[in-house]
Length: 287
Image 1 (cartoon, one colour):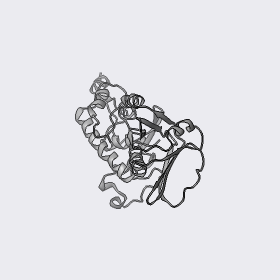
Image 2: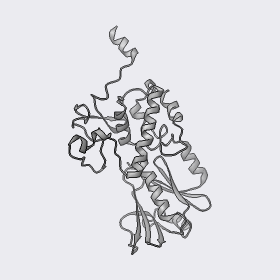
Image 3: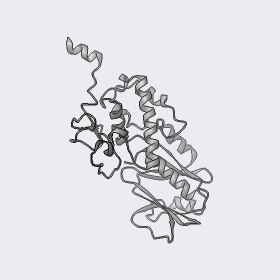
Image 4: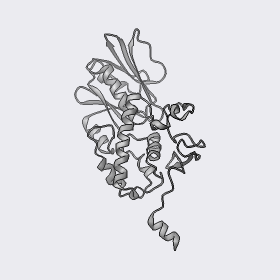
């Protein structure tokens, strides 16, 4: 599933391609046909992302709400000499004409594509935790949930009601970078640990928007510095533990492990992320 940086990058690219233009709006697949007719010929106001939710604004406070889900793609083409016919199951197509040629965007495979008003947008956003990529995000909102929860921090980071936009890659890599056991209870974290994690996440995800991929290794662990081959993976980017189960850790050499946590694959290094044991648990073990 695309993570938050992908949606923010998509919002920037949609805004660049279509904002301020009257666009043709269609639904070749037919599942968004009635809504598309209401928007056809209107001017795009821009696009914004909150976590993994995308909103494309039209006049009269109308928003196309999109959630890509596991397989959704919203592909944008600009500067095209010709406008090709849609290929495959295109649920939504936006078409604009720019000085450099045609601009078009085709949405396929999305979990949700709906026409919403401002109340629906507000209700959706209200359910989300703070998004590290939004300037108004308040990390204390996430901390208030984390500090009171006995759920594992690995599960809490993936809960969009706690933190919006974090997916499996950022979850695994953030915990590794801060040497935190993914199965450690959220309530056991210290405030200073959470502050450091939040600051790191803001920087990592902003870099993800800039590069349009996830890179999480520090300079001393890049392929060039370590003399190792670059990572070959369809997710791209250099990482420490994500989808590296069975391979040696770049830092300590221990074998990266994986298990299922609340229905998603979890990756961690048992050497760098030592099993958390509470003082109470240690006391009980001695008795």
